[in-house]
Image (tube, rainbow, N blue to C red):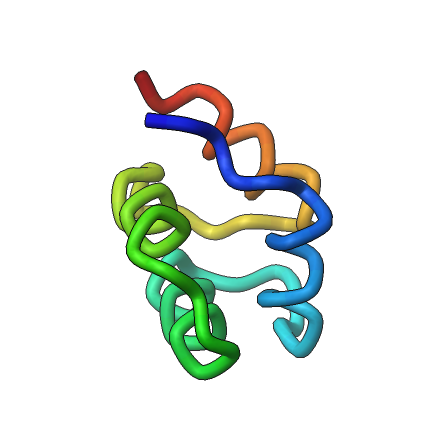
Length: 64
């Protein structure tokens, strides 16, 4: 699975109030038109609280 582009993630998650849960990341990305690849990555990251966009990007990069 190819890691989502960090700039694309930033645009999709621009209205997220961090820290937030994975479910909120998915909700916001869906609302901003994320494609299946991005949603798949967000759905595969650990169900946790993310403190900022960098922690989301790191988690997405760790998915194999």
